[in-house]
Length: 63
Image (tube, rainbow, N blue to C red; front, side, top):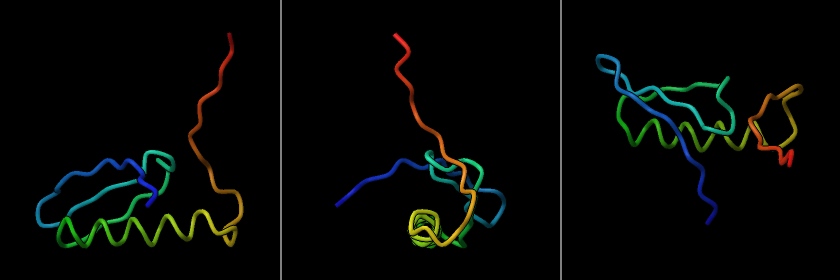
């Protein structure tokens, strides 16, 4: 199973979050478990090639 890091917080009665690899794309859920499921769905959509111009975060070795 592949693991992805995500950032999340609770804002009043909603849980909001995004995948570290895709910080421009946020989702939400009524519970933390709902948020996690929505993040999984969002990851699939962002990586399956169906959406154009998806922005990502990456690392570059410059030394």
